[in-house]
Length: 270
Ligand code: ADP
Image 1 (cartoon, protein in one colour):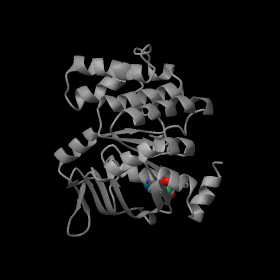
Image 2 (cartoon, rainbow, N blue to C red):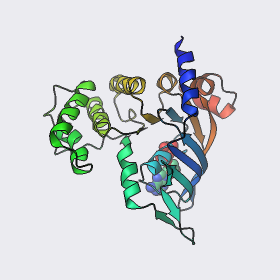
Image 3 (cartoon, rainbow, N blue to C red):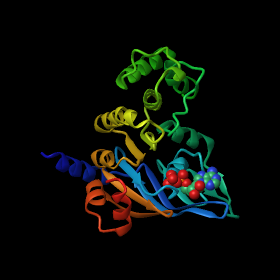
C-alpha cells in the first residue's frame, strides 16, 4: 500500500474514535485584543495535527490553553469528557477541579520554542524530575526509562551533561525526551525549531518524525516547516486572524488548497 493510502486509512480509523480533546466556540482576548474568535477543534487519540498560519494569528495561544497555561475568555475545552474551565453566573471562569487539571497535565507533554530546561540539573535529572516529583513514580524505573529516552533522541552518551554544555538542537532533543518520559497521550510542539540555527533544525525534526511514525500519542505541532508538516501530519489547520480559516488532510491544504490566503501564505515558504 502506498504511504498516502496508509495515512488516509489511518486517518479514517482515527476519526471514528471519540476525541480526547474538544474545543467548542473557544475565544480568547488579551485586554482589547481578540486573539481567538471561536475555535472548534477535535483531537482524536493518535492524531497528528499541524497548525500553520501567520505570526500573531493565535497558534501558540490554542495550545497553551490546552496545557492550562492560559484560560479561555469563553467557550469550552473538554478533555477526556470533562471541561477544563467552567464559567460562573457572571461569566468569569472557574477552574475544573484540581484533580482533573492534574490528570490532564499528566496526559499532556509540551515542548517549547526555548527549551525551558532546568539549568542546574544534568540532562538525566531534567528527565527524571517530573515523573518522580509530580507523578511520584519509582526512582529506579524512571531512571531506566529516562536513559532509554535520552538514548532514543541520540544523547545516551551525555547523561551527566548540563544544558549549558549542549547545542540548541541537543537541548531541544532533551526537552523532547523529558516530555516523552511522562508517557503523555498528547504532545504539543510550539515552534520547536524556530529558535535554532538552521543547521540544527534537521536533527530535531528527525526526532519528531521518529516519534510521529512510531508512537501512538496524539500530536499538535505549531510549525513553519511545511515539508515536515506534509510528511508528519494527518490534518493541517490554517489559522488566520483568530479563526481556523482552512482545515483538512495535510496534502489537500498544503498542496491543493483553493483558499487564496492559504496560497499566499504558503508562497512565502517556497
Ligand atoms: P502565534 O503563535 O500565531 O504567533 P500567539 O498565540 O502567540 O500567535 O499570539 C496571538 C496574539 O496574542 C499576538 O498578537 C500576541 O501579541 C497576543 N498575546 C499572546 N499572549 C499574550 C499575553 N500573555 N498578553 C497579551 N497579549 C498576548
